[in-house]
Amino acid sequence: MKLTEKELINLVVEGGFVARKQFDEVAQYAKAEGKDIEEALIERDLITDSHLGRLVAEKRGYQFVEVSKKSIPEEACGKITADYCVFPRQDRNSCGDE
Image (cartoon, rainbow, N blue to C red):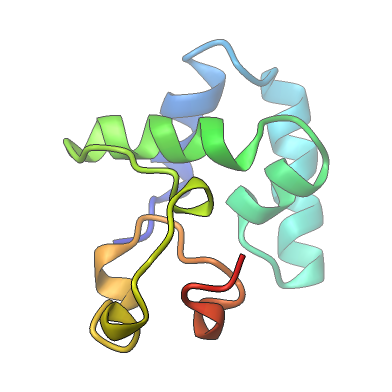
């Protein structure tokens, strides 16, 4: 489930990780470019992908696992869907590739 803009503000602005002015600028940029605000925050180096992932997982009550540091068995590829990801990787089809 995607976070709403208000939920993102609660996490990153009220959490003290991003200034409100910066958030608003990034939100405006994201909308103009057709991007998700999360993607734009990371792209603009205001928060790392890993840090944002940890914040979202904590909010949702999930355990955060940084899959880029794990090896996914080839037989698991195709069985894991984006439904189980908080932030699916852009290259979801590269399962197991390092």
